[in-house]
Amino acid sequence: MLFSENLPNLQSKIRILHAIPSEQAVDIYLTGNLMGENLVFSDITCYENISSDSYEVQIYSAGTYARPLFSKTIEILPNTTSTISIVSLNNNIDIFVLNDASVEGELTSCFLRFIHLSPNAPLLTLSLPNNTILFGNVEYLEKTGYYPLSPAIYDFKFSFSAIIGLSRYISQKTLRNGKFYTIYIIGLVNKEPNMGYLMVEDGR
Image (cartoon, rainbow, N blue to C red; front, side, top):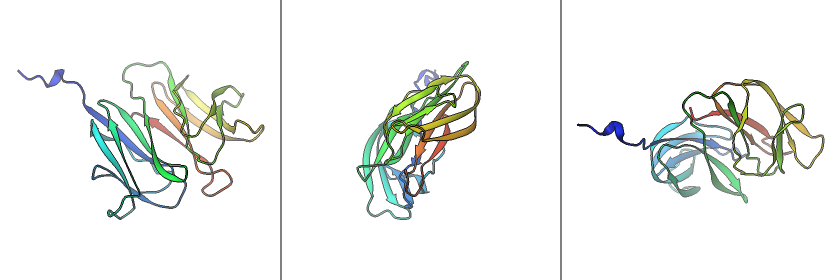
């Protein structure tokens, strides 16, 4: 008799986002295995399957493998889906690990998360054009939850929480039933590369 059907799912998925606002391209390794090659600012990889275990995240200048720019050990838990963001913290390279939703089955809503990855921006707020606030006063590298929304085409407004009237818009985004999404705010305020956003589907 075979028991494999009764074993828990130990496979997980990860993807990598380059969110440091600089021109430097990097290669990303997990304990010596290449996971992202020649990634530049705002690049995000597709999910890759990975076994649950402890891994050393190693970041190198693209095309080199002599001395890492950064290394840190992380734990990948069984049956999880994660995004590893390369970020700037106190002017140094760091990583920011988010657990992404990966829910199976019938859902009657879609879900949105808002993540602040702009290192020189103040607190940020995401709202609807009618000023209904979805996420308020979000700090840099804050881990927000998912907000349930009805499937539809949306316009969003993000603004600096402490500066009245200074807003930018994210227009005509289709949110589909049963899907999970994240809006990442990246880039710099009044510097290059300019502040912008990435909106991605999670868990697929």
